[in-house]
View 1 (cartoon, rainbow over the protein chains, first blue to last red):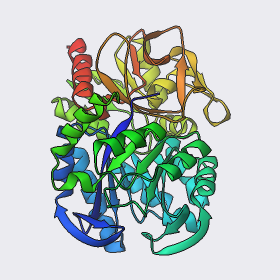
View 2 (cartoon, each protein chain N blue to C red):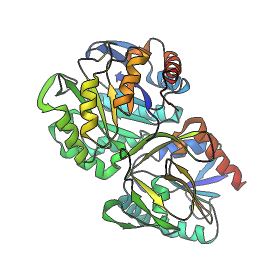
View 3 (spheres, one colour):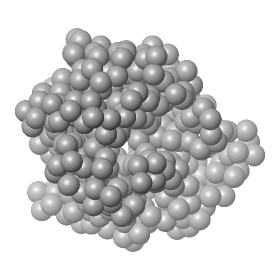
View 4 (spheres, chains in turn purple, brown):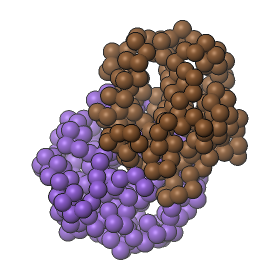
Length: 244
Length: 179
């Protein structure tokens, strides 16, 4: 298996980085390209950019952001938020993204995952799942779907998803640790890599998450202090986690 | 130095283009005449091969190869150069390099992430579900073929354009070997 990955996640809205707690109370935290470059310098293995308020107006802004990121950075990055069609996905990949993440639109029309994987390949198709109490929610956590995270992850894999980005809404922004139970259930249910997301507060949380998932997403823990990524990597290595 | 990047109409070719631009290479559309032709790796095998044929790149690459002029295949670009691939129910490749691409059978697939390559300490970024089975392998990563060399063709399964400092150094050494 490749080395476990640490993936800073930049939630963006209107071209700026934002961050909330349990998906609420978004605060502005800077320029995505500058912050992305900083994380790359501090040793990020990958980056994720999620447009948390994707609108038609925002779509063009997002493509421009992806173009700027790829000009500046030579590490892989995933982009998601408001991807509703293969064309939306292709526009992001052509602008320089390596993978596209689909969420609400895939829940509304699961064939989107199949179509995207066929067109761009599984390795570029990420299905993002937001779960609360093990149940999937859509539209940035605002709507119930009646599906379980495990069952939806399995279906996504069958349809060609190459990676599952699993966010626990319960843990998001709390810095109290990842939802290890849910992450393990999903990781055991699929054979594709799983990225654990939501709840990182200290190195021990990340180490625990990397025992059940192949990558850990990091957000709140880093945004006020991007240099924390480097010390976090050092602390993880001291704990015996082998990193790049 | 002039580099031709063989587009075939699927996904992220921009990163490869930018990586060579950072090294100071000039880009050309002339696949036959360029100092280096690059076959990037994105999308699925069948769509990529159809795209290459539509643009006439398949014949141009074959001619380059027969003349012993350098070609770099990246990820799927490496696999396309083989005789065939298991992907998409079995597809004939360009046949520049003996061997075939087979689906990965160990670990989580796609194999995504950074891994070391034999013969060095640096880690490179991989993202693939298929890998080469070929007598022309020259390096490995966790039992997976990482690089292939045959005649004037060099293929890497990893993405140097996405492998940060190590990847830039790799591409620079490829360019330097042509100078």
